[in-house]
Structures are given as structure tokens and as C-alpha cells.
Length: 189
Image (cartoon, rainbow, N blue to C red; front, side):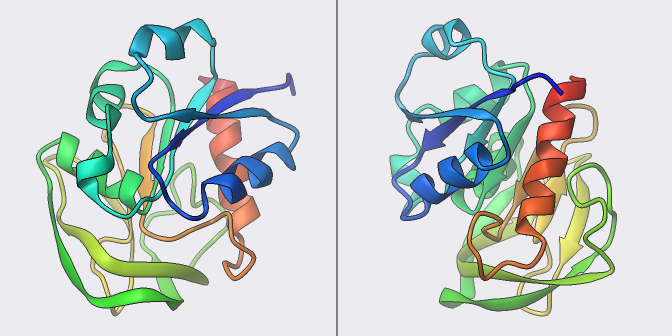
């Protein structure tokens, strides 16, 4: 496997550095960049994929909507990044019933590329202060929980994925497997 280059888009989430570390520990070259970095500067880095970090509020998501719609690379959105993907393609996000981080049991509906080997159920660490409420048209729902119906999504034709939970934290079972699966998508793209 060639060394992959993954750019972690910083949406001011408290786990951004953990994403960077977790991906680097999987032998990828990683770099955290600002979510206001122009698209041409991102492309000049010649990345193999992007990870959109979590963050406190959508108003601080910078140019993420442009990245999602205009950059032709595999993209993994985590928490706020997942919600930004849904919004960029016409989905809807609303306040969740459970804020704060907690352990959540996820039901994998479709193993797909990034959830391969994670089902049928897995325990994750997530905040549901905000969550995807309406799936964008054509998107594939990959996972659900008893707290949130839309825990993970996949674009119907592009390698764009979103997960509500944080695969980069140690409290998430099989988080490393999810990140490895995403790196495999990046390698094959």
C-alpha cells in the first residue's frame, strides 16, 4: 500500500488532533488544515482523501460545503462533518434529544465500504446535540441507533461518507477499522 496523504479539515472540534493522530497511526501522511483553506491550495497538496472533523457549530464550518460539492476525492465527515455533508446535498439537520458525549449502540444497516466488518451492532462514542434528521435525496443510510435514525450515510455515486460518531476516540469499538476502511477507499480511488 502506498503512503496515503489525508488532509484533516479543522472545524474547531475538540477531537481534531485525535483524528490526525489516529490516521497517522495507520501509516498515512496526515496534516490538519484550516476549514478556510482555498480549494486550489487543498488540491496543490495532492491529497488522497479528506476528513471533515467535528466542531461546535455549523456557522464555523468555513468552506466545507464547497469542499464537499467541488472536490473530487473520498471524503469522510465526522459528527459536524457528517451533518455538513447532509446539508450540502439538501438533507436536514436538527437539534438532537441527547446532547453531550455518551456511549451509543449502533445498528449497522448496510456494511458498505467504510462500515465493512463493523456490523451487525457496534458501540461508539457520540454526541447528538445536533443530528441529521432528513437524508439527502438518493443517499444511502448505513446505520441507525435508538437515539438517532441517521447515524451514517453514503453518497449514492461518490466516495463521500458521514458518521455521527467519533471513530478516532478509544471509547469507540472498531473505530480503527472504520478509518482503515476509509483509507482503503482512498487507495482504490
